[in-house]
Length: 201
Image (cartoon, rainbow, N blue to C red; front, side, top):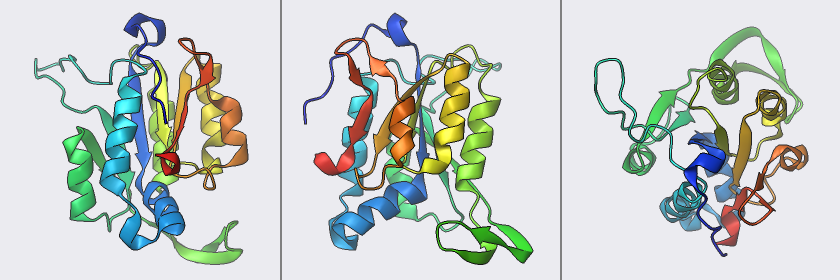
């Protein structure tokens, strides 16, 4: 797959990559099997593509104590996130955000399985809350979601209402929630949607 041309940073602004680790890894495992996921290689490729869109979030930013920020994005993961995968994301400067499960004594209906779950993952909930809280940040210009879950459609709608551009890295074409593409912006350098499918590399 051809990578898109670099854009002048002032055209789009800083890119904030956010990863739903479960969606990312489960989608690859479903398509390729546990032994052929090539998670590290696909993540490396995704980061090169994301860098082509603009300056990564956190590069050259000083905090209130004068310390240079090293975080270039955030990976949201459940409590069982494995050490090897943690190191892969560390390499690219991702900050790890652990999302604890919620307990529902009477169970919560799972629309995907049709069952009642007592322990519910909160990764998508945490990502949605996190992104909405960042809307007013002056450096928040491009949100790059690394996931394909249609649960993020309401979030992408909200971000676009606030003038934030959306890019998408889908683990696989099959895992992509149909409506998500409707909210992905066009790259002004080549007039193509800012979407990358990791099963095509």
